Image (tube, rainbow, N blue to C red; front, side):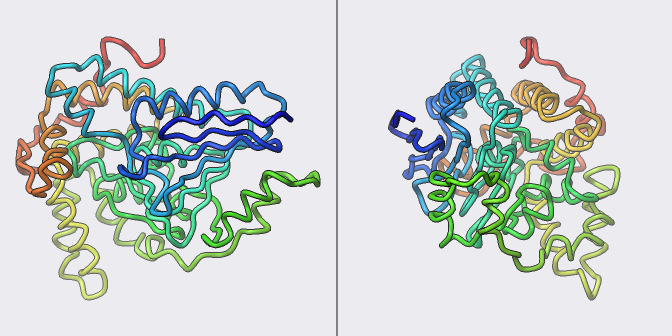
Length: 360
């Protein structure tokens, strides 16, 4: 085929040898997704969808530290503070359309989630048809720390995780390594970092009729056992409770257990650092996602949730300030405790419908 090289400042796009490649290239922000980056990725995928010369797509990073740290939430905060809620909503609309495009893509998409892959990075890697992690991978949905809730289709992945691991990961923002990510359903293959370059070259130059899956399996190895799986007993016990308050209370009880006390206490500490409002919404959204029909329906719910949170809470503005702007790591969330969040808050959140729906 004719080589193409469509280069954007923060997204490198090229097609060669049947392989379309999208490489995130915003190292200063660890590839935090801007609206321009999202639109570039979407445009490339749309152009290749009906291009018979492009058989497979690879999404990776030019930065060895990771694929993507999330969305550009600093810019989002500025838009919300300025009262530009329509602008903020359009950012989410564009991102969620991209997430859906990846999830429903008709050609194989190989996402290489090495290093830090969080938030918006999960929205790119987590919905690809072939999801690769390495020994450097650190995956998480940490939105409750900034007063938000897991989105980009992340609640679909959390809802499909075994047992109540999804509630645990969504509420605490806990980080998964490669083994954990595969066990929780966020990834499919473990390929050592040193073999990633060879894998991409093989995807580009393969001359035999092997499928993408068969080729990846030539590089795939078995990771170490998952600590997340080993913890599932006490995680299901605590995070299967009906409310955030009951989960917290059970973690307090388990903190005195000789076997799991340290891990339970660590999870309880994480909950205490998160936005109580976000915790209530996240618990409700993950559980409601189990009743929804696929990624697109979940994205629509997440769009409604973002609209609800901007109207009902200032925690996102405060959380981003504390974590990423002033970096004092001391957010003043309101309400400040789990007990102060209205009992019906999560139910109201998932019942909310934005005035302008995500999907017309």
